[in-house]
Image (cartoon, rainbow over all chains, first blue to last red; front, side):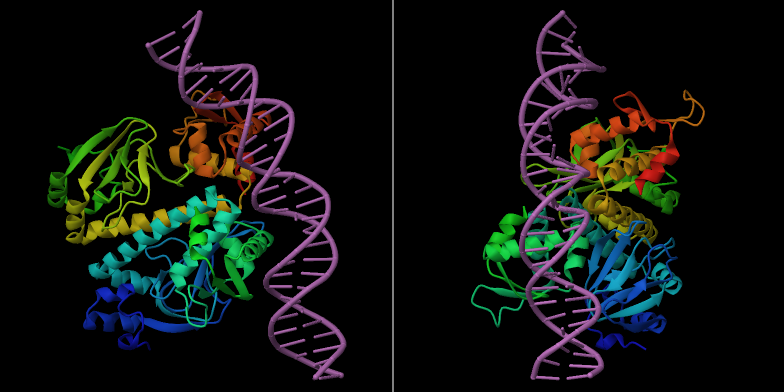
Length: 230
Length: 230
DNA sequence: CGAGGTCTTGACCCCGTTCAAAGCACGTGG
DNA sequence: CCACGTGCTTTGAACGGGGTCAAGACCTCG
């Protein structure tokens, strides 16, 4: 059984709307679950049976066409909410990109709890409105940006979302450890893996980034990145 | 001053959550407004100062890159909600595609009213969750579909959203009056106006649709459309 | 009837995909 | 410790879908 007092996202997740007593009631219907990288907890097209808060890790939301093309439609981080409350089927799968930890609720239980706790619903509404804004901004990238703009926009977003280590770097540089494979980056940006790889190579040749290992990126010239993101 | 009792979207908009007394209170802070085709009520990047319910018409939500490329990120119909409650700036402009009528509230007034009426917030939450699902599905189209698939998906969506007249048609055919110009269709699909035009011509030549006038489309073979939408 | 905007069509080209092969990191077993 | 296999990534070469540029057709309204 989860102990919310010790929860690292206690004050950032939607649970922040609740007082100690309410939190205990929510705690009673939830349980924490660990996911290995690559493991899914929700599948596209299924009935929505569970919802969850992300405690730690990074997860992708993705849809596929019948013939197997994939599009990643969202990426969630600690304190984010996942799943589809209030009926209907889940329109996209949810899969851990790295080892993750989530706080899971049965959708039925959560729905009932939420309907009787307006402050929680309010937090969820604010979060959903924010997610909708973010998603719509991403549509501009998918519909109208070139491969170069997509790549640089992606790296800028990663810097903002993940934060960076500046230690172990030359002054002005930042180190980024991506939670994505090349294929997953392609699925986020609506490109092929080859185009993603070529863009990485180009940025490296131009001295804007460096690539110490497969998952690591050193940001050498952040301004150039922002300028090219459009 | 609006009279909610006569409102045609009374039972479908978020207002459906309210009883007669509450409705009167909401009525007191709202007013109806008429928009001509092409007129905007919200501009991208501005502070969010107003929200509204759509009573009649069709409106687009759109963002632009600095160099003028446009992407339409949403289309709203009667009973839909527009604007960004609970702080922040509006991330996209809202513009009428055809002559429209909306029920406008100051964002401050609406926020305060919503926070004290959980049933209204709940309706808004359900609506926002639905809109987020719809938006994410559209991302698959933008990121992964070909021009032909985009075009046919668009026409299928239009049939579902607008309904069709089957009178004044041969048996099995349906007539569709689009609220979009060719350029706007291109901005929805992430294509150029020329590609949209070519796809229309192709579908006409293949006998799948007919084009009696600029804004009208006759759906001759709906199954073929669905099959090609992917 | 003419002017201006929207839409269609054609010709060409380029960006990103496709197809193919080679390089690289990492784990496993000899 | 090295040989080998496997999966991911990079790179190259060729192709083609959709963009770009330009001209012409079609509406609509003064």
